[in-house]
Length: 379
Image (cartoon, rainbow, N blue to C red; front, side, top):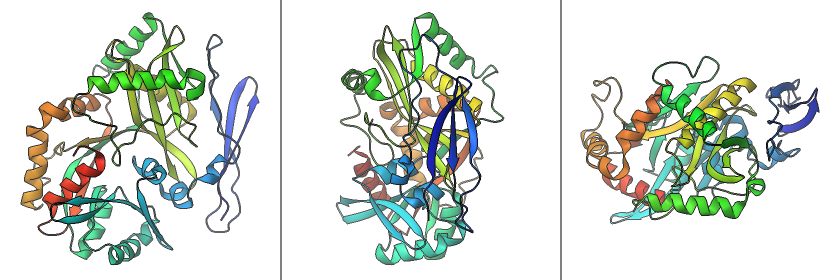
């Protein structure tokens, strides 16, 4: 099958893009569609960089067709993450040792067509019996029930539906204020390549940010990913600059559906420790407004781990030990990781909260979570 390709040009002073998408039934490319992108400000030191021609051809086919979750892009592109692929699709997973042996941890929904989900899970579980699944949708968790798995609510993912979304309203006043304050303080927010901004400058900023996060020994991986300062196909990178120096940045991973990037997830956020709090919010709001103008469908803010569902009765019937473990993480570890503060902050964006689940087999939840923590780098 032909991979999608990007083509770019300039029409009437505005940058445009079009994406050729293969027709999944006939194999013929569909008619290309154009998306207008506002030009960079005249006084901007850097400009919007279009993807290289055919750069998406380097991405795996299953990612392009079915990589619509917040973790899809980062997992497939992480060399430390293994993938299981067959004719039905692809599953990303990791392996970690625990005091009771090695555990296999699959993350996010499988990359496959909905009608192939059960067959892909069956094939994967033959190769990796009793593997645990983290941050999966209800559809995947329900499909795993046929194999003896039980699901446990483990958090929510926040999605901003950009076509209907507006930054107006009292709850989002803090984000508008952050953007206005950034402008008053002389910050300019731009989209660019890292080499234009200065890779060493960005690494220095990131190192300073890490020092402020005393709980982190290293960059989070698996359920997150470290900052990549090289060019990455489809990843959008926005920077706040003051007097030409970076003060914050946010990298947005693409989410794909049938060959098109329909949305982005705010995956990597960094802010200079001396900068005014809220600068990353200003960068996200700037990017959200740009994505909305381009016709992008969704902006994902990622998972709020261990956040309880809005419906207090939603977890009735879920495994007691796994539910107690999730609740303990939400309450007892909040002082270390600020789960509740981050989740409350995300809720201000007026997004849609979608529950995600852990799915495991009987009497394995504790060490499944231990293995997941080791893969993430927290243990």
